[in-house]
Each structure stands twice: as C-alpha cells, then as structure tokens.
Length: 166
Image 1 (tube, rainbow, N blue to C red):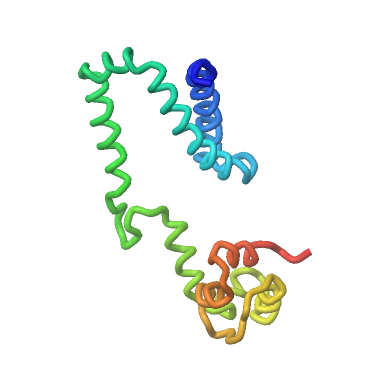
Image 2 (cartoon, rainbow, N blue to C red):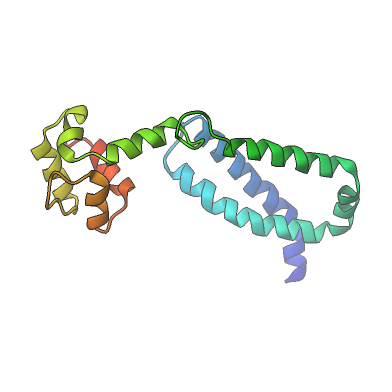
C-alpha cells in the first residue's frame, strides 16, 4: 500500500493542481459551468492530501528548500500579498466586493421594494417565493428574514429572485 501511495503522490498532486488552476482561473474570469465552484472547492481539499503525500515522499529534497532563503522569501511575499485582501477597500464593505454589499442591501428589503427592480409585482414575487417553499407570512418582512423563517439560506432565496418564470 505504501508503495502505491508513494508512486502516485506527485502525479496526483500535479493532476489536482491542474484542476484547481483551471477552475480557479475560470472562476476568476466568471466563465464556465457553475459546477466549477464545487469542483474547485472539493478537489482543492483533496489536493491537501495529495500535497501531504508529495511532501512525505520528497521530504529530504524539501529540507534543502526549507533551509534556503528562496522559500522563506516566497512565504513572506505570499503572506503579505494575502494580508492585502483583509484591508478595507474604502467604504463600509470591509474589503468585500461591492456585489456582496449590494446583495445584503437587497436582502434587507421587503418583496414589494425589490419586485419593481426585478420587473415583477410584489404579489407575483411573493407567489414565486411561496411556490419555492418560502413562508411569506408578512410581505413587509425583509427577504433575509423570510429566508431565515423558512429555514432556507439567503442564497436559495436569491436564486428564486433571479430565476425568471417560464
């Protein structure tokens, strides 16, 4: 069993890295099927295991990298580049993309306020929500509260909002 793991440590690392690379680039540019998101997240978790096996398999050569400056410098640069994403990008968004702030503002509104922006009426929108399993007991409640009261995520409610009835 150990020889099989050792034989496939590096090839699986390469294969999973390529999947992570391709899906990551597609997600960055917002292209490709929606399945790329799940593929990227889950197979990146498997990549951790493959990387661990690769590290175990190549431990002695890795020690040489760990003793030199290039690895330390690369890790410091990567840490600093990552830290930049935690800095606020102006405003009250906390560094998040503006689309998240917009989505939170929309979800804080009742169906009657959001419906015209979606090209529908409040009644049609509440009917769509009810048909999708959301409990719209008070149409004056914000969409986020409707989702919470229905035991569903705001993302599930957002999906209903953007899906056009056929």
